[in-house]
Image (cartoon, rainbow, N blue to C red; front, side, top):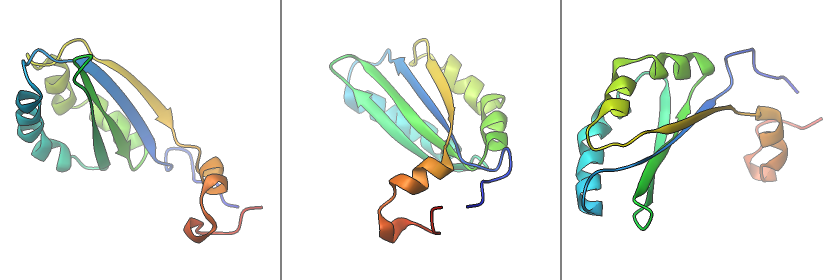
Length: 117
């Protein structure tokens, strides 16, 4: 099985933060405000929005095409704006390499793109 070249495998950012807005609707308005800029960011495959209104904690799971795309995002003006947004409290963020080989082993047979050896 071929293993992707260094930096070519997907990369994940998980960020969580408290928000300083009063309601879930206000948080959704913030998401609508920031969504288009996120959608347009090169190399960002997807963002899954996370919400725990009871804990007043929100966040996202960001999937990037590569570590290079992730690095570009976390050093971007957009990420600086997110971290400094007045409605977003101190952000906790961790990044993860995607283990493509292990992922293939856990995939359903119909989802596998190649034979696992």
